[in-house]
Image (cartoon, rainbow, N blue to C red):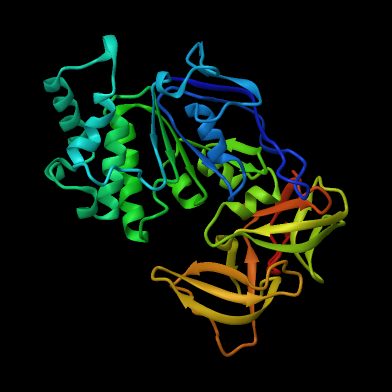
Length: 380
């Protein structure tokens, strides 16, 4: 089922004298979710992602704009008539009912022409349980299950009616790290098998990037960027998106472009073309550093953190916006920990420039060399 949001807006009234102004939780959101895709709504707490989900489900009414499922305008349609399955952050299972009874509950509430026989309901419940691999737990109650198993029950209950749209509101936030990884893989598998259009809300960018066909990055109710996860990571439109995506986060420095050179501190670190002389923010992904004895980017050495196949070099730089600089390099490298400094060259494709005033991305050429000389001093 294709889902179309047209200029969707939600405003909440002010509360009391101190907060008299109304709050715009979702501001003029326009987006089309193609049939059968899994879309991640991503952003920090308070950005409007859960409000958007509740508008799609019908739990909230929009202040403005329209919502379409396929060609049908469902903006005024009650939640029970929208054909959506909703999985909450806290699972919302009935503790006194068994797994089977929890899954059957939505089917037992069907009325009129949609009412099903007991045999059909049981068949659908068993099918949903098999899909999420909990068919051996049907006679247990939620209190006898692990967090991951409870989450699967909640997903099975949402899927049992085979909804047109599946909505997941931070479904993994209550799970430990290993279980989160396993469960998000299961969610992706189930979504692929069923082909149900799915909207997945999370503040965890790693979750969103790993399972989504495309992501929507939001801030203060406003959509910042929409695209395929890797494309958004590789080509952020502004400093907020660049900072929000990536683990460890992007390193940000105060810099300037002057006479075809990019300076961080007093050192020219890369060549630039087509960019006017100006003060900029320089974003460097952690994987954008190359350990180099005569590299132009010089930091004060801090420590080395072993991560298995990679190592993290933690250092400091006077131009850094953050307290530390973190570079991810191959564990095959040997870092001289006795030296007070560590030197790097930078990968141009992992370096982004942003306006100092607007924090919007500055488009232009970034190169490793200036006038035929690489930034490590070698002539081409």
